[in-house]
Image (cartoon, rainbow, N blue to C red; front, side, top):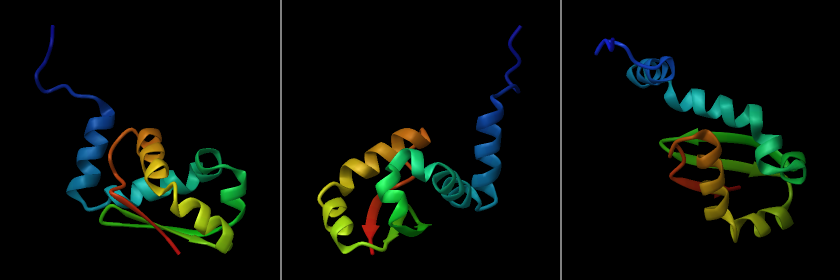
Length: 96
């Protein structure tokens, strides 16, 4: 028997986070936890910090050469990270 009041735990958690303005903080924590695996070791080694605000992921890099290389592939990076997150949490990627 199906109860219309039942829903997935993940959906309930997302709803709670969204209602309390914590969804982006959760996404950022997940990004930081998996950054080395998702972005690669070279990018991870040169990343100083990550910041997410209103769907804009700002990546602070310590290498100008890497910044130039990533700037040409920022849309691919955005799509890759959204796929890994399982949602469209990142609207734009900025490199600094």
